[in-house]
Amino acid sequence: MGHDRAASKRPVNMTLNEDLVRRARGITPNLSETVERLLAAFVDDAEAQAARHEQQIAAHIAASDAFVAKHGTLADEFDSL
Image 1 (cartoon, rainbow, N blue to C red):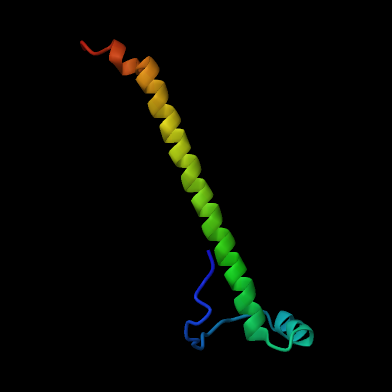
Image 2: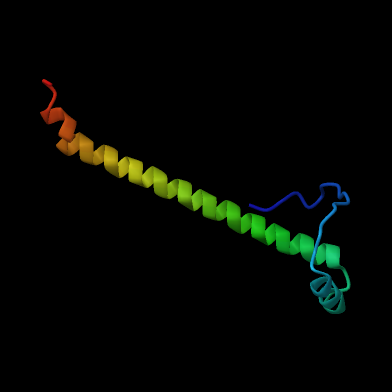
């Protein structure tokens, strides 16, 4: 999916583990860029997972509809009640 890399940036207030921040700063020269890249990957993955879930739901609904079209429902046998 991706995100708009040209979108403006704004400061955000986050509370992070102090030790992790210290260690990360020792690894990366630009912590904001690293966090943004990781956040983008997380969001892309979460959106893809949600899309797969929606596709699974649609497939289940289609299968259920096909079954009912072929075999009817239990309620059809008790139509006269």
